[in-house]
Image 1 (cartoon, helix red, strand yellow):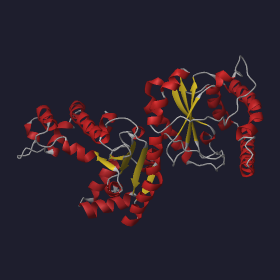
Image 2 (cartoon, helix red, strand yellow; image 1 turned 120 degrees about the vertical axis):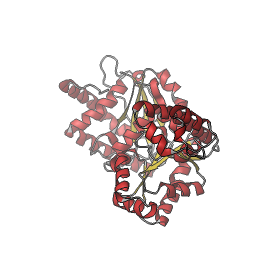
Image 3 (cartoon, helix red, strand yellow; image 1 turned 45 degrees about the vertical axis):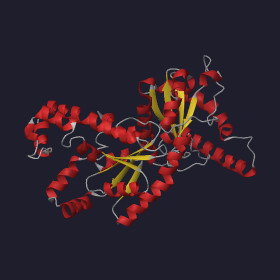
Image 4 (cartoon, helix red, strand yellow; image 1 turned 180 degrees about the vertical axis):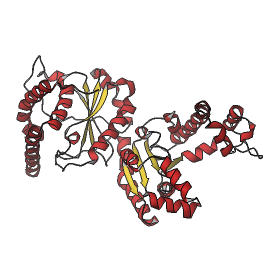
Amino acid sequence: MIFGLIGATLVGVLRVGLTGGIGAGKSTVSKVLADLGAVIVDADIIAREVVEPGTPGLAALVEAFGADILHSDGSLNRPALAERAFGSDESRLRLNSILHPRIGQRTAEIVNGAPADGIVVQDIPLLVEGRMGPAFNLVIVVHVDTEERVRRLVELRGMTEADARARIAAQATDDQRRAAADVWLDNSGTVEQIEEQVRSLFTGRLVPFERNLRSHTVVTVPPVLCGPDPEWEMQGERLVERLRAVCGERIVRVDHVGSTAVPGMDARDLIDIQITVPDLAAADALSEPLAAAGFPALAEVTRDEPIPTYGVGGEADPALWDKRTHGGADPGRPVRIDLRVDRWPGQRFALLLRDWLRADAQARTEFLELKRGAAAKAAVDAREGDPTVTYADVLAPWFDLGYRRAWAWAESTGWAPER
């Protein structure tokens, strides 16, 4: 039902989910985005459109719940419908089966009618509660603290304080919204301040994101290390869920790997994701769906992780380390996605290296020092115009020894990749 409400999954047009708690000011953000040229799809408005007098939706509701859900003028009496529809799970499911397909169909019509270079913003109040985030290229959350929201609801909407607090308590928490938010807009200040935030977001991220999506352009980052960022973990989780939604049943698993998945580790500001596929044919079949979702294939793949020359049972065979690599079109969140075959050495080692570094402080320190040296060497080479020694070349000797040590750790601890 979730994707029915959204209208469709990611399909090559930039789709942005907009949400926020009651009283946070979503309508202000939505209006600014509309003025800037975004196509706005308002879930509440559509939900009302599909049950207006004379519509098949209203007729279906009357057939299911009786004519006494109508006002005398033939329009829908929403409190009367709620009393009937939410009395049991069965009646609620009947209501959803009537409304959700119609909302989804109307939503799809608006999305499909957007221009080729359009930016579609879907205003969905319960996006977080419905776990709809993975269906969008980007999720924007509008935030205001609870006390300010209560004040606005009481003073501007005429609610009682008890009613305002009850409605806020019934919605997602701030922590749940933060976990879902690719963009967090603080609307605690003036109207002018939130408008400036939205304009900056539109021109600085949404417009280039849409352009990159349409042209299959990958956002790259130099081999410059950043200090540990606590946001990396949640960003990785959102990417994992988004990629699962895109790939569906065609894959084995999706994991956040690499240095950004190791707490406390310096890393390039690039989220590494591994998609495990049953074979390389499945990886190739995912090339177009991934590109349409904002994750184009890299035209030229340069290895930024060396292949260990040490191997057991043929694991040093380069063919068994083969993969397909994609990047991300979002300028606000660079990503590298490696599609590797289940149980091949590269697939297992990506998971093992992450878990070993998480568990072994000494190995983590050694690797961090090596990464810092490699990044410094790359920076010097870039200034001097010498491309002969790469970041991966500097790391290569450590990987040969690290490969053995990681597997020794795995054997001593009984490690196995979690499913």
